[in-house]
Image (cartoon, rainbow, N blue to C red):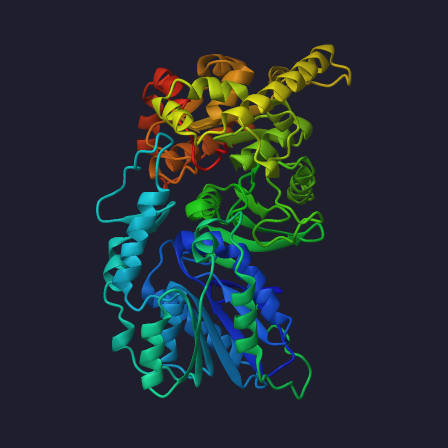
Length: 596
């Protein structure tokens, strides 16, 4: 597929060899963020049928222009996508495929614009229904490590850092497909748990309607690691959109849109495909300061490069306004990069460091500018290992680092086998009353844990002997690696949510937060009211401040930024580090990274 820019709307386009074009209209926010990989796979499978295919990010989401989502701009993006497809005179038919809220918007567009087929995947008949579901999702997803709800701004509905501002909420509350006009499509496919009412409405309007289920929908929309579209439903969609497509009379369609960068005030986004299948977006400042470092953002888990709550895109464009370039990348097996050769996910996989090295190669190809690497959880893991092995990386911001070294912490047990926690985590968890309730009720597999801990104890003893003997001549312990980083002048900043499970490994490897700060030569920030993904605005403010600090120590200039609430972030830093509270909270489970 080819990257296209349709008036500031970022998209992926595949030319076809039939007279039919398919436009994929995703849903909003966290649901689309989680479904990204499955949505990409669906577009590629449809393209294999010979239909031209376009998927895109709404303005205010992903890599498109804008800062917030509005209904009118989202609808206009769909209109532009249709016009883009119709620019080729060979295209005679348009099919819209809409997921959830994207299905609702597709139905609205089909009532005003001529389309031939319409696919609605679990659409909302009413905007108020969507708002109610988002409120429920927000309560389920936006929780602190101790299980308490995250503080939120009044009047704003947020899910995993994706915010529905009051203006968007007001617009959504007015949507009702019963009041929309009759869709122009001659046939409609409706899949999902509540397809009957819409199907009845459309059949009464004289439209041929097919219906069916959308199994595993909640996993698709909430779990980026396991959220694959059900094969039966995907096959039904592909069959529906491609059936009866006539072949082209002329040559295959080629991309028509300009591949020009997407621009905004002070920044330019340039898509980058490199290293045989890796994808990223390089964000360049309007005026890059001499000696400025460049920032590399690594995936948080397997979420797409735009980031949880779109925070990575926001960070990148904010840095550009301060004269700092950046690259937000996807590792193989994540986002828009190709699959890994092994077919598994890149989480904590040591060979995925080759992708990080390839990105650093791209960033330093034309100049020897210093690199700052940023990552959360597994991304922080890759960032730590990358800075340890690559002298071109001068600084790292590690957010909620789950563990420093998988071998040291888990004895070589692969991530996909869902290893038992580090033994020190269980010691801490025994201080939690809720843990005893689970043990007494039988929901915690005590015998399995005991066997695993025994095996791991032997493994850790062997590792300790190996580390102490230092047979390979390289730095084996985390303390010695950090000492090596400081000796060569590299900087490491660490940020945690209060009670995050990663604090267990911090204590195991480096001691208390105060001791770790001494070893690092800088503070370990422990934030109250922040979740594992740092989706809270206060957490993002502090991370932005740390990036600016690292840019200052790595470059030749001082930087400022007006996009983030810097005073609020500074106030957060001046608060006591709450190490006592953090120590007491280590026993609390962190939902995003824990396994039993």
